[in-house]
Length: 113
Length: 116
Image (cartoon, rainbow over all chains, first blue to last red; front, side):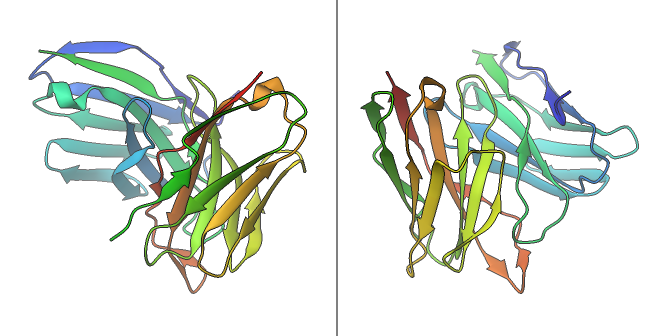
C-alpha cells in the first residue's frame, strides 16, 4: 500500500465549476501538507502549504486537512482553462531540513471552455 | 530572483552508460534535493544535499550519486543506466536555517532522460 493515495483521473469539468481534488494517506506522522500544480513538461509549482488540520484559502484555492481521517483536499473555485494541469499532493513529517516530500501520483485535470 | 535551472533539458542514453545532470539552485537557497518522476507517477525522493554533503536519501541504489558545490549548485550522477531509469529528474531548492526548512520547495523544469 502506498503511503499517499491520489486518484489519477483524468478529471474533466466545465469552466466555472468548483473542482475538488483529494488525497488520503496512511502515515499518521505526516504534519505538513502541500499541493503542487504541474503543467505538461514543466516542474511542479507550489500552490498551497498547510500545517496540521484546518483550512487555508488563497484566492480561488482552498486547502483542507483532516488529520483524524487522514484526508486532504484542494478546492478550486471558478475554474479556468488555465487551471488545466496535473495536481500533486505532497506531505512531510516535519519541517526539519532533511525531510523528504512524499507525493501522490497526481490528478490530471482538464477545464473545458 | 533567479529560479531553479536544470541542464540538459532532454537527453538520450543507452543501457550501461553514465549520465550527469546539473542544477543551479534558486538565489538565496542553500539546499538541493533531487527527485525522479516516472511517467504518470508522482516524484520520488532520491537524495538531498546541504552544506556540500548528502543529508538524506531515498530508496535508490548507490549508482545514483550526487555532489553539491560551494555555490549550492548540484549534480546528479547515474552510473550503469537501466531502462527503468527513464524518467523526468527534478531538482528542487530550499532554504534551511538552524536545521529547519522554510517549507517551500522550488522545482526546476527537469531533465528528461530516456534510456534505450
